[in-house]
Image 1: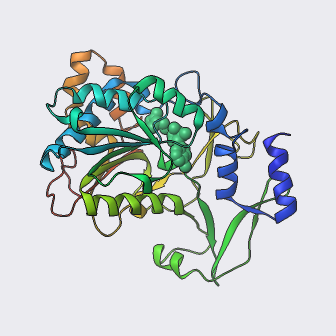
Image 2: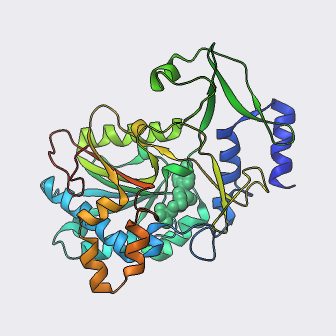
Length: 337
Ligand code: SAH
């Protein structure tokens, strides 16, 4: 049975499904899910992420994490956490750059949050001495220094359309056709998207909010910092649900399970009470951390361009830092928050 047939059967049995259910099945179905079976990364895959473009990305992220650890008083034991590590390239570059910082690697316990058993194997082979966790609730009670690159965009979203009487959910019905659910009042959406025009689509990422909430409480209770890099905007609205195959956008309903499904990250939803934050573009962040000099040393103007230029990843990709309140100015976020 194909994943498409499984999805059609579920719709026939239970009615139209929210986008979130469709994303879950397409990305994480134990047998047919995209991350369970495809080789998504790199030139031969469906998309190329920043750490796969150049070692400079992970090195600078590593130096940022080392810096935040030093700002926190260089705790003797802490969790170095990555969410959604893919092939493990980013963490490998972080660990190599961090060798320059005395004490950091001795104090670090590397933890990876990864749902795909296949990618867990790839990460173990690339990184060696690491621990996988299935839920953030399993983090040790220690400061956490965390990074997530192109992770939050893969979490399942739901979509709602505003009308004059309330909100209707965008659902996926028989034949994988869009349809609208019943109109319901949604004070939470009214509050999150005030003064929005009728007919606009908004996206709700409950999983992203929950994970950011857990990270926030952990940083508030035990110290640490988190860096989230992804495409999106601070308070975006509109339909950003997309499918990518072989570096091209394709129909989100074409051959479910064979394309990467994502939505833009709404960073505002990741900023919750209990932490201070910094927000900037990937281009500005990497420039502030000195990528130009590193690119010159490595003689790699092409990677510099791809990572930082406004026409490439420099402006579409954003960087959010979550830090303990009272941290003051955050390295890499010269413009403030
Ligand atoms: N950070 C890597 C990979 C990004 S792809 C890079 O920059 O190259 C997204 C990663 O998140 C994959 O490793 C995928 O398996 C993982 N992932 C997706 N949804 C997840 C979830 N709900 N829980 C844990 N890991 C998840």
